[in-house]
Length: 396
Image (tube, rainbow, N blue to C red):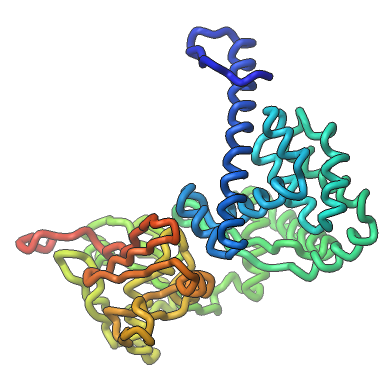
């Protein structure tokens, strides 16, 4: 399909013409995505494959780190090990998402076997959806290296992990990734069996809801979490806590939640409340109350409460799981005080030490990160409440 030279107004087209236009535009997008992969691959070559390339791409394209990492890996593979797959993109026959599926499915192959799989796939990919492409690429990879595939299965099962994905307000997902298929299947069967046993005539929850509730109850020791305690940071305006206002609260690592849910969490059994003093004009943390049941960790605790999450823009790892770092390195005159300490997760802590990355912390708490290409990105802890005029009276 030839590239479009002029795009007609879709409102003037019939059904078939709309489909044809969508196909033509998709083909043009595929060609542009091929150019983007080449640009990313060239950037990686300039940096000798440095890990910081992933963060550079994440910043520049406004994508999450996981997707940026997949894009970099795919770009490197397409421009070296998968030339025919990249050629299909140049022809508008394969989109970037499908090409990334091919790169991921063949990542474990040697360069020689990857080239062989690429040749097998050239005629099998056009016109296929992403799931078909994934299956075809997986089959081609196994075909060219059967012994390696068996070893990979063993290694892959060793890579099992538990992940948490934050969703919309008030919900999140937990997933066991790459678990042994027989155990995952058996676990689902047990959860499903217990959920169905609870589905009596008086039960209003759906089977999907019951499965989720049963799974969480089992993970929490079969008691629904009633005996479980863990520290989380819930940020809520005093007026909202008292029910006078209904401003959203924030749960560190998750994001904003409605006032009603925040009050429910804050007033739950076993909750330990802290007094956090804020600047009324800015909403930023000034001090922590010391009246609680467990001892504080001084400056470190203050910085974690202030920052809430990793300070790199786009990273939402809770501050409890981060490392304290000097915005100005100790060896260059940095000081260990709250004005110069920031929270960075381990990955972003390492990124800070990569050549060409510059971190500057302003007096108001704004962290400016400058990348090796000169792009600057700002990060500031959000205020605990909207800034208030000095003369604003309490709402009661």
